[in-house]
Image (cartoon, rainbow, N blue to C red; front, side, top):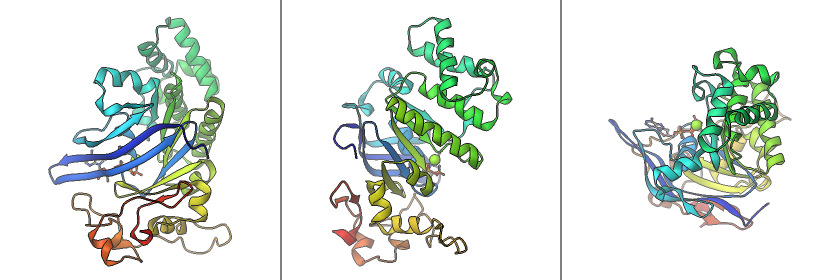
Length: 323
Ligand SMILES: Nc1ncnc2c1ncn2[C@@H]1O[C@H](COP(=O)(O)OP(=O)(O)OP(=O)(O)O)[C@@H](O)[C@H]1O
Ligand SMILES: [Mg+2]
């Protein structure tokens, strides 16, 4: 594990959505540290706040969402204190994000090449010609076949996987230090998913960027990540090295998630799911938010929010069973 040199530290982050139905506590008191050069996975069930957390890092939480509290320290600077103008410089050039749905990430009115060069021209003082040259290089890096021709293609002329590659090339165009990939999966079929993930892994190795992957696929985590954070209902409940997490999961929720993976030896066994449903984020349960679904719940779990405990070797868990 590459401990020590941290690139991103999130402290006490709260992101709420102010809806007519009430205040949705999408992210609550979230803490996370990510080290330079690692591949970090953020996992958890749908709606637990993975995308909102990483959008907060870019300060791109959509309304009615708002970052209410917390610190987001990137390379020593608190991003939440920066003027918008400074933040705009960081977005794309230092930190970039590949969003979940490639169909909405691209503008249908412009060619793939134009959208890539625009990003370069907006941040770098280079000629149009060299920006197009760079775009062509990037298309090769992300393994777009016939890259020259694809530069001139409009999004509707590209397949889903190809669009995802274009989006990835845009995200890489300014050599970001931190690349956030929001599960490029839902919109894509399984083989293309695997190809894109393979590509990201290669890029991570080649360029040493720090990669944060958002996923709910534990197989992907096992394949790719160095470290993992498990989120539940807006908070991180466990963080560990990938081998440690799979070999010695501590939080009952993590154990449940791992049990839900069908094992190779028991293909006929039914896929287990964790009983109960994700809590209402407007009125989350008191104490530990997982307690209504937890088979080990004790009295204290209903009253007190568990704090993150360091179990050694960088294995952190927020659960009263260990305090
Ligand atoms: N526009 C919005 N308005 C109101 N609530 C929102 C909005 N966007 C997100 N939320 C709330 O934030 C929570 C977290 O959403 P988020 O998109 O981060 O989940 P996720 O973990 O990325 O899920 P998935 O795996 O499905 O992508 C959701 O459960 C929802 O309650
Ligand atoms: Mg998401």
